[in-house]
Length: 296
Image (cartoon, rainbow, N blue to C red; front, top):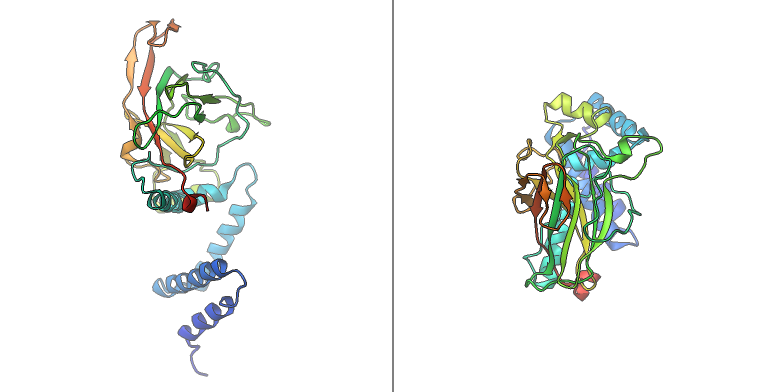
C-alpha cells in the first residue's frame, strides 16, 4: 500500500473550504488548515499526543465557573496578538499611531458597573491600600476630550476579583466615570496586588507541565471611550509590582507602567481628608480618531 500523500491531504482539505460563500471565512479556514497541518508535520505529532490535546480542549470547554477558553487564549499570547493587530489596523487607517496602547480585556470584565461622580471611591470595603488615580483623556494631538467614559475594574489588594469571592458575586472595585470639560478624571480605588491566573483547571495544568509562572503584575483595567474616537481597552500596571517582566498573559506594555507615590495621612491633592497613608498615580490616555475605514 502506498504512503498517503501528506501534501495532497492538505491540498484537499484547503480545497474543501475554497468554495465558502463567505470569502473571509474561507480565507481564515484555508490558512488555519495549512498552519495546523504544518504544525503536525513539524513536531511529528503522535496519535496519543493528539488525543491528549483533544481531551485538553474538551475539558477546557467543560469548565463553567469561568471562561477558561479565554484564559487559554490569553496565556498563549493569542488574545494579545489579536489586540495588537486591531490597534495597528486602526492606527494605519486613521494615521494616528500615538494612541495609548491597548491590552487584553481578560476574563473578569462585568458590564453594568455603576455610573459614579468624579472623585468617588470604588475601593470602599475592598482589601488593599487606598490609591488615587488621576489624569486626562485627550486625542492624539493632546486636545482634551470632555465627557469621555472610563469603565474601571480591578482586583483587590489580595489579588482577587469580585467574581471570585462569592456565588453569586457582588460587584466591587468597579465603576464608570466621565471626564470633566477639560478632559480630566480622578477616582479612588486600591493599589492592586499581583495575582495568579486561575490555575485549578486545564490552563493551570499546562503551566505546571511547562514550568511557566502563573502570575500577573498588579494592574487596573480600563475601557476608555469618547465620541468620534476608537474605544480603548487597556491596563495601568503598577511599577513597583512583582512579576512586571513575566506577565502570564503577555499584556504588560512599558508605556502602560505607572509610578505611584505614597503619601502620609492628611488632605489629599483632590481635597479628600485621608486618615491613613495612600498612594497616587497619574496617567493621560490618548484616543485615536475614528475614520470610515476604522468604523468599517
